[in-house]
Length: 183
Image (cartoon, rainbow, N blue to C red):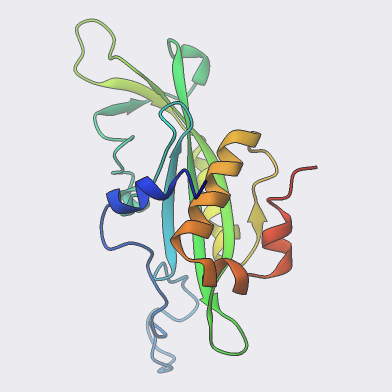
C-alpha cells in the first residue's frame, strides 16, 4: 500500500529537515556558549482533518502556514469551532557511529478558527506558549513527548518520519520508536 503521507513529502516547505551542522561556538568559549542551537530543529505541522503533514520552518518564528493571519487569544474557549493542528518539534543528531537519526520530538496543539469573525480579516487561534517552549526545549534535549497525541496524528507523524528517512527512523533510539507503538 505504501506510505499514505508520502504525497506530502513533495510539498515540503523550505529545504527540508535541518540536517546537523557544526558547533555554533566553534569551541572558542566566547559569546554564545551555553545557548541552545536550533540548527537541528525542524517543525512538522500535522493537519488531521485534511490529512496533511509538512515541514514549515516558519513555525520557529511563529510564521508557519497555519499561524499566518491569525490573532492569538489567551483563552481557547473564546474560539468558534476551531480546527486542531499539531506543531511537532523534531530534532536530529548523530549516532555513536556517526549516522544521522531522529533525536527528540515534542508535540504541541495549535487551534485555529477556519473562518475569521465577521468584520475581521484575521482568524483567531490559540496555542499554549509555555507548552510550545517547553516541548521544543525537551525535543532539543532528546526527549520524546507524544503520549498526549491522538492516535491519528501520532500515526501520521510516524509514517511521515519513516517516509522522510527510513535511515533516520532506524537509527533513532529505541525509546523514540517505542513511543509510537499503539498500546
